[in-house]
Amino acid sequence: EDISGTEATTYFYHQVVGMSTLDEDDLRPTRIIWSNVGYLLLVWLCIGVCLGFGIKWTGRIAYVTMGLPIVMLIVFFIRAVTLPGASEGIHAYIGEWDLSVLKER
Image (tube, rainbow, N blue to C red; front, side):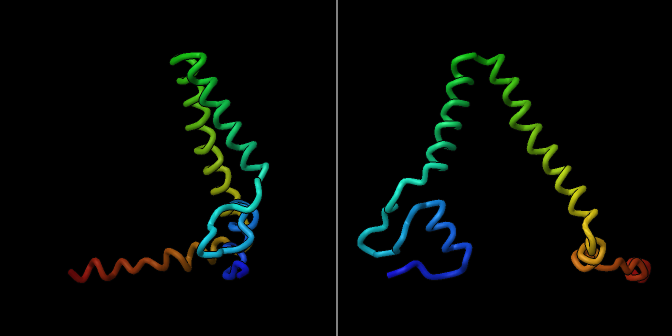
């Protein structure tokens, strides 16, 4: 039985997990995804560096692992609000303020 569903589900099971079928009897991955192996080795390398160099280096690494995602989030936010049509999307998401409702009470 082939994997059915959305394109995202199909991509996840084929490319990320490595499954080709969703047989009830055998839900194991059918092949090794080498990019996942590389990411796993990279994570363990970072853990080994943190443990090997001690608390001083762990603090420095924490600055990067906390600071970089925040900087990336700010950059992505600035990029998103400068795209064409962003103001219409923000207006549709937030809506209009009707402050006269507050005056009635």
